[in-house]
Image (cartoon, rainbow, N blue to C red; front, side):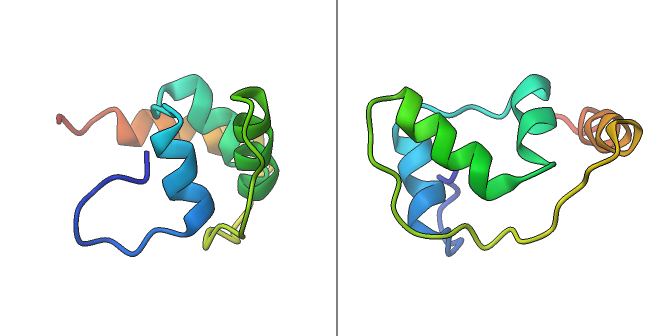
Length: 78
């Protein structure tokens, strides 16, 4: 997460990627309802102090919608 070269990630996204965040279906499902809270919680779990704001301001509250987004993303290969 937060590691594609040439993309201007926020500091908190880069920190989460450096701390080992990998985008699994479970992580995406937890991220989409509140990206900022997810990243802050993830970094705290890794023993880090979160800093900054994510650029992802959109929240996807409905579980069905989150499942649909994850299913769509899974149609792409690496």
